[in-house]
Length: 525
Image 1 (cartoon, rainbow, N blue to C red):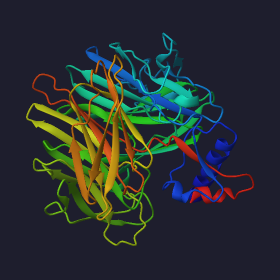
Image 2 (tube, rainbow, N blue to C red):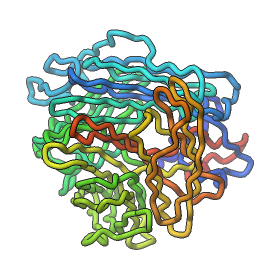
Image 3 (tube, rainbow, N blue to C red):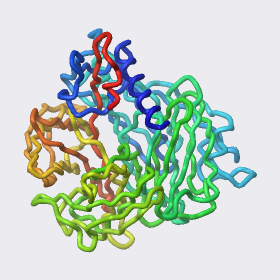
Image 4 (cartoon, one colour):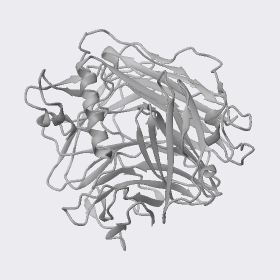
């Protein structure tokens, strides 16, 4: 039934492209897989959702919007618009407007807030409206009541439209640097690495971009399977509104390492998890790539003091994985962890400690049996610093960069670009373009070659004459082997090594469009 539903979703996407309202591209393996007589066209409309950034009184959030210059024009050739607008917030059962830390009379938290009143945003003016491609637009806010944002881009600004949300919190339990590439709406999300333990406060933010309500189910998986006492069913997310759900209110079983499955049974939502640790600060955990037999987690910094892997085999079969670290010199096997066994439906966590040993790397998980098709999903919690000066970030499994990926909000310093070509004998050749700055600067391009079976960490190119922020666009050259990418932002706060890591999946800025009379089932394989 699940496979049939996914096939129908793929057909619907293809039909949407034909009628001129395609929002995303289906996953593909490049133009070589385009059906005979079909063509690849740019999407004509993109949707993005940014969750409410922080409730801290000492937090500041920067939003940076960007669309790559030179992206093919839409089918109608119009210039296009791109903007985000504030969304409403559902009032929780305890009377709060943000769903944070309060509980209703029945002892449950934000999961019950879906039935509450929607609080309209105080201001509905567009945020970071983009007028042209190739130059970022930025805005900042220090309001603890900053709302979630819902928006869309069309025309020439739709392909590759990216918005980065970066929040700096100076003090308190949520202190640190929180970064997130605003998400696209979908119907299912996986979040390995969440926690319902007492030293963590993890909220999943569910945002509905559409004019009709969405109905969402939340399911938590621990080391023994589904967590007992789960109460995350039938959460209603009103139109153009957001619902934050405190995960510890969904179960009576505190669990340090868990996996969250978000499923929209009606409508679609954007989802992201904000995790706050009493000792390690806070950051966003973005959704992992769709479960697959092999996964890549790029961008572990060279000075990581601890790395924790959390993985799940969500299908009906167990999975046995070969664990390797892609380094600048090749693939190596972590000491004592040649293989990893995942039981179906059960979350497994492994502390890899200081895995990188002073050398940046990316984790590559592949089936021990090359013929295994058991899907897996995974994420890393990475820590930098020691003692009271520790900061955490998350790296989920990500999709490869097939055509193009973008990282917005880069400054004069503090960015590190990670590229990994996980398959031996398949070198990746990648063009990296630094855009003009938001306040001035000249674009510059540099090409990198990553030998198959290795990873590469570089300080990315900076535009000459840079003023403000700039974007990085990553594009594999024709004939390149598979490549995965991530960008780390490091912005120290006093002695705290504050940082955040954003994976750079393909932006799905184009879609395969079949010719009239073509069998659409070829697009769902």
